Image 1 (cartoon, rainbow, N blue to C red):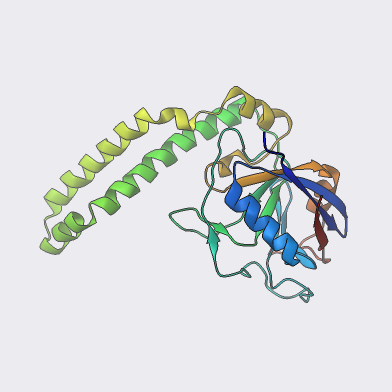
Image 2: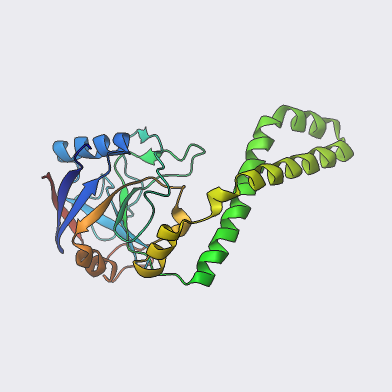
Length: 248
C-alpha cells in the first residue's frame, strides 16, 4: 500500500498536521506542488464560520489589510473533482477543496477548507437523506433538460404550451425513475452516520466538494480558529496566518 504524504501547516494559532489521500491524486499532487512553491506561506484563513469550516488559500490574502474583501483570489485553473464517497467524507478535520459553482464541481486551484462542523442526531440524519433524494431527482431532471434543450427551445418558440407541459411531465417521470434506481447513493453508511453523530462534520457537502485529506494532529487548533471573532463577511477580526506548510 502506497504511503500517505503528511504535511505540517504552521499557523499563528499553532501547528496542524494533515495527511493527503492517495485516492485523490490530482488534488494531492496539486496541493504538494503549491506547498513546494511556497504558495501558502503567509496566506490567511480568510473565512471562518463556527460549527462549519475554516477556509484559506486565497492567494491575494497575504499581508491583506483587515478591511480588504477576500475570497476570490485563485490561480486561474481548476482541479477535476475526485469524490471517493463514502470512504472519504466531510467529518470534522476533513481537508476539502473549495470551488465556485460549476456543473463539473471542479475544485479551486489553491483554496481549501478544513471542516469543523457539528454533531447530528438520528432524526437530523434521516431528514438529510430525504433532502439528498430530492436533490438527486432535481440533478437528474436538470441533466435531462439540458439534453432536451433543442426540443424545449423549439416548443418555446412555437408557443406550444400543451406539448411543453407533456415534455416536462415526461422528464419529471424519467428523473424520478432514475433516482429510484440510484436511491442507495442517498443513504449514509452506518460508519458515516456514526461519525456524524459522534465526531461531527458537514454531511450536506458530501459528493459536492472533493475531500482529499484530513487532520491527524491539531484538531484543537481548528477549534481555536473557529472560535475567533469575525466580521459580517466571516473574516476574522485578527489575521490568522498560515505561516508555512512543510512536507514531512
